[in-house]
Length: 239
Image (cartoon, rainbow, N blue to C red; front, side):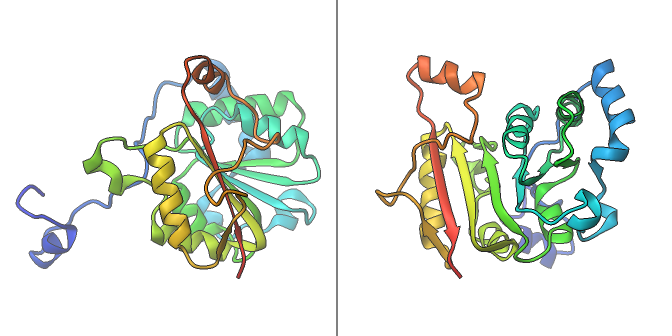
């Protein structure tokens, strides 16, 4: 696309340009344990995009507050949160298959029945599989910061994404973000402050202290020891 400055210019010239995604597809090699977990646990824990709109009653066998996490990595904190909040149902989305395998393995070992996972693009799952006003909380923890300025447009927290997510949250539902990149935290705050229908839950109208329900990861603990900051943002859907 080097001769075109924008996808629109390319389209006008009849050239197809692949859609920019908010993640890098890192397939990675599955360990035997990860592969076995996916093979043995997918029937009970896996969700498939082609099944369409998520039916919570059918999938979880109950109606409970529904929490969605986009990009759960290896799933350690997601499994911990699902264990600590058995009164809620959790859906995790991750494109990295080794992470999905580890998450399923840990969830099975913990005997969890309130956690299901997609192995797919979060933006597409949000659009195609999550009903409007169905979520009590959306979690986006340590997403790819795309720290080079020319890549900032790839960051998932953008006005269009935030608006589509608002429709999926119930009134009073919360969008909780966390990042260890100050520049991305500032970007998130700017986007959210300009987004209609959200109220910042920060007492200082910027960031919030890490809530106890979000586990402190080993990566984060190491960052604290090195003097690195972590920024949490929580915005409630007001209308």
